[in-house]
Amino acid sequence: MHTIIETQHLHFAFQTGQKILDDLNLQVPTGSIYGFLGPNGAGKTTTLRLLLGLLKKQDGDLTLFGQHFQRHRLHILRRIGSLIEQPSLYLHLTGKENLEIFRLTYQCDKNRINEVLKLVGLQQAANKKAKNYSLGMKQRLAIAIALLHDPDVLILDEPTNGLDPNGIIETRELIKQLNREFGKTILVSSHLLSEVEKMATHVGIIHKGKLLFQGSLQQLQQLQSQQSVVEIEVNDITKAQLAIKDHFPLKHVHGSRLVVDYESRERSALLNKLLVQQDVEVYQLAVAQNDLENLFIQITAQ
Ligand SMILES: Nc1ncnc2c1ncn2[C@@H]1O[C@H](COP(=O)(O)OP(=O)(O)OP(=O)(O)O)[C@@H](O)[C@H]1O
Image (cartoon, rainbow, N blue to C red; front, side, top):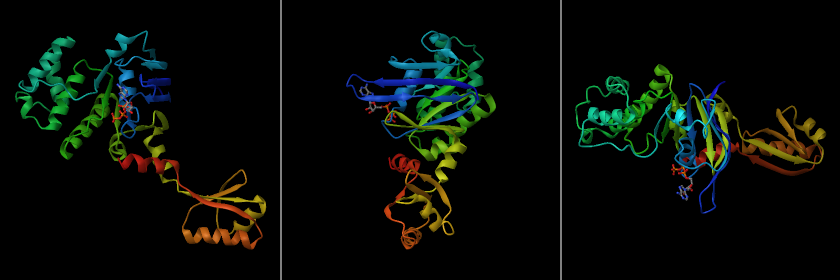
């Protein structure tokens, strides 16, 4: 797996002294749609701003396209398109005129305007004023602007935030298409697991500035499906294993604890009974939820 964006031991604090990023090691694979997932205030925007040089890096390193950010800043930024804040569009101008302004700034070829209009599906609306665009169309125009210089990587901060359901679908489909048909690597942040699941190939979960999970969407779904477990602390592990072996498959032994899959309250009671009947001393019997499950509850509760 080749990575196109990497952060190494990234730390960041604002002047208040509050830690915002704590040893963040992101690895965005080339050609992926990387869903950067975390609740509000987790540190997503801060990370993306650092990657774009919009905030001054403190501790740690940033590597993009295999190059050190500090040393190859301009070269790197030329290969990235981004949408971090609300798109700044000229509402009294048409979509095409908006693109023309940014084309002159970026000094791109004139025919690039029609190319990007086609890419984002705004050809028909090219000569309409942006103020008459739906929110989804405005977002697509903003993405068209970010694509003018034909970047290899797109960095999008919560691109579906504030959009109506149609706008969300349009933006999501566009992201997938840009990845699939044009090979763009896309780093996209979101606070919604459901949103990330619908488009990402890879996921990084950030919470209070720490990366709690990173891997493919498949790996995440595997972890999610892992059940809660029952942990039982006993005086005699061997005797305990014998006592339950015909009724409960053992997951693993963890110190003086046995760990089995959680099934139900009744089955937990049976577990206890079997142990006690065999004279095993049960010091503690507790249900432990999958950590990710807890995290998702927090994320999706926002
Ligand atoms: N300029 C600043 N000065 C001090 N603290 C800040 C500043 N900007 C952001 N923060 C704080 O940093 C933390 C992380 O913010 P960040 O915007 O990176 O989170 P986020 O994951 O993008 O969430 P959101 O979706 O709400 O933007 C928050 O607690 C925020 O209040």
